[in-house]
Image (cartoon, rainbow, N blue to C red):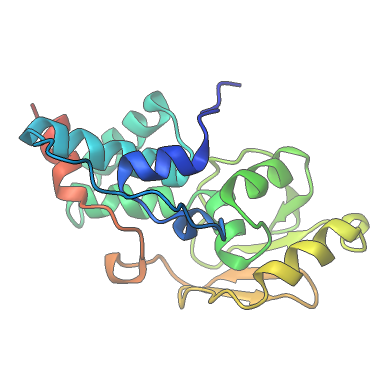
Length: 198
């Protein structure tokens, strides 16, 4: 499976992004600003798309598929729908609930068949969860040291209002579909729509 292997902090600097949005508790000592470089309109739009792809760990083809799906939805705006679809990915939901320090780790946990959705094993990170879905870690994996280590790091992380997490039992519920206001990613989705509309 193709993956973005670029250095995280370097990529964050290039995109003007705080590493905390990726679940990484590191700071870059270098300056975000790109001295004297004026970015074109296209460049600004492209950067927003790259930012969204980088935050959610999605490559171009699946990102474009999500965009096409968002465009076909009969409610809401395309940009908001795109972010909601990305937010409802199983790997992202695991990260949001605190069962992965980063989205990459959450994706690996899903890949390794540790996750149950409504009692059924799901190992597809891009699986779209729905309101009412119950997500849990497999019983035989719950005692693993890995999850104790993860929760040590993520316990202070705020779980979004649209999710419910029970860290003691390593389970969680999707209470509702998130709204744009509940998605805290620093992405201007309007620019992504403009880019794809060209």
